[in-house]
Every structure is written in structure tokens, then in C-alpha cells.
Image (cartoon, one colour):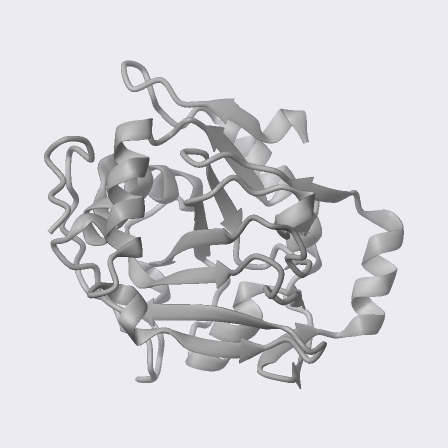
Length: 262
């Protein structure tokens, strides 16, 4: 995994050829400390506000007597969450790994609560998005933990390089779509299985065909993760559905003290 890990430097950050090659080869890049602690604190406060996005939370059954909570929205607003999703450091990174203009496809907050958080099945994000009229897998997820994530509380797991398999057939299982279990089993025999342990402030950018999963959270620590999905402008869905078609994105230069927690 080491060849896909980089560290953010606000004075010199740019997507290098090495990063592009790592994304293309492995299906992801992990950028340490891309948000500073003041930014993390503000985002966390906004997401924990009971009058904020969590009032729209719904529950997902994992089919194993556990649940996850989630809230999802289509367009970035002018609050902290919207500004974070539109910052140059996030959007420009996505545009450079995808090689073209992108727009905000959706954002979601996934809440694996302590001792009750459920499993997410092995799946590809494009397993969902393919059904929404997106012709190509020119899409990326930006995974931003609000809490530290490790094996104990159900951190993200990926099969390194699995995006090169192309889209795998997905089946409806409980309240989720799961990748074909036979195909996943065979992929696990030949691809490296990685537990992506992260701290708040780290950001993972991963390809929409990368196979990923997460275990139940049986620890005493919750696992909240903020995920922003982007679609390439040239991949505008051919039909209308519950996520937006191309909508121009107004980028934000900064994501520090200028963010309001209101």
C-alpha cells in the first residue's frame, strides 16, 4: 500500500505523475493530513449538530442483525460540508486523476455507531451508479473520516487493483447491493486485501470500480465517515434519476477559518 500513500503540504500540493500512476495502478491514493485539525473540528461540529444533516438520517440493514445509519444529499451547499466538497484541494485532485472536469454527484455521511454498526458488503460504487445511466466508470469517491478508523471499528477494506476487473455484476442483498460473491472470492485469491486505517484529516480518493467493504463495528468507538462522489462532466448520465446530471461546480479556494459552523 505504501506506493499509494502521500502526505499533504499546503505550500506545495499538486497531483504528481507518481500519484496518477498509483491511482491508475492500485485504484486509489491516500493523502495523509489533507485537512488540518481546525478544519476537522469545524466539519465534525457541523455534522454532529442535531439540526444539521443528521436529522435526515435513515437506517440500512446489513443482513446480519446490524445496521448502519446514513444521510445523503445531491448538491453541495454553502455550509461547511458544501465548502469542503468544493475546495480546490479536493476537486482539483479528482479532476487530475480523472483527467477532466468533474461535478458533484452526491455526498453522504455514513455512521457506524459503537457496538451496533453493521457491515457493508463487498461492492463497487459503479455497481450502483451503472444503474443510474452513467455510461463510463469515470467517477471517484472521496472518503473523509471524521473519526479515526481502524480494524476494531470497521475501517474500509479494499482489494488493491480490483478496479481493473471492470464492473462486476451486483445483487440485491438486504438493503444493499453486493458484488457477485463468486467473483469476489476469486479476486481475493489474486489481489492484495488491504485494511485502510486512517486518522481524521486523512483523505482517500478511490476509483468507482475498486472493490471495497467494511466490517461491523463491535468496538466502543463510533466510525463516522463523510464521502463525496464526483462524476466526470463528459460522463453526464443519459437519463434522469435520483442523483444529478451535470451541474457546474463553483470551487472554493480555502477550507480553513473562512468556514462558518452555522
